[in-house]
Image (cartoon, rainbow, N blue to C red; front, side, top):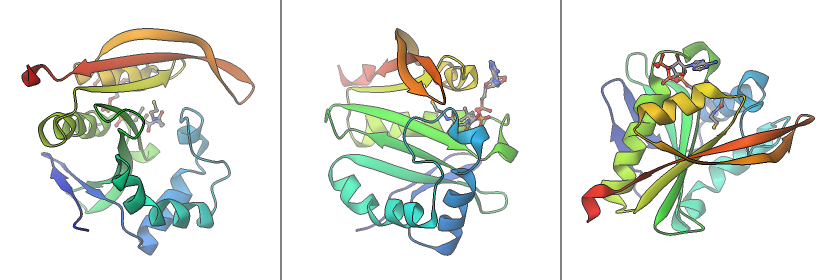
Length: 180
Ligand SMILES: CC(C)(COP(=O)(O)OP(=O)(O)OC[C@H]1O[C@@H](n2cnc3c(N)ncnc32)[C@H](O)[C@@H]1OP(=O)(O)O)[C@@H](O)C(=O)NCCC(=O)NCCS
């Protein structure tokens, strides 16, 4: 199946393949506690087999409505992150999730990638809504959502137990206004 490729000023977002570079990126970053401590899903520690399994299941996941993109910085052609859009449970609503390698934080890359994914969700997939959520102790991610014009919809109190803490889970959403 042809890979979807999205482009912003500084980034290329394209679906994952199965290269050594990709396996290395996943293994390095999903074993970095700076990143994993505020993520919801991946196993920890994250093995090479976990990375291979993730990459090998992307095509099937996409058929079910779950899109995963590597984030490539154009300047040096380097993978710097991952962003996903999951419309598996509800085909009109996509849940977005993302991370950026620690060395590249604070330069607006997550915001640039999320804004593009929202555009993709509304223009290409014709979704009605995009949502995202973050732990209360991860305000940087909330800021990314705000900068993409998402609004707080609610807080699920002490909803997720991770690393010995019950985390408040803050939900943001944005509606596809052009649809109506
Ligand atoms: C959250 C994350 C994706 C942000 O990536 P990034 O590329 O640094 O994000 P951006 O540069 O686009 O924006 C970050 C914003 O958060 C702000 N910020 C950073 N730390 C903050 C803090 N402790 N409190 C409040 N705001 C903070 C930055 O100042 C910036 O806002 P600004 O442009 O108004 O100054 C990145 O830190 C990450 O990968 N974290 C680990 C994984 C993760 O938490 N993913 C999200 C799960 S919900």
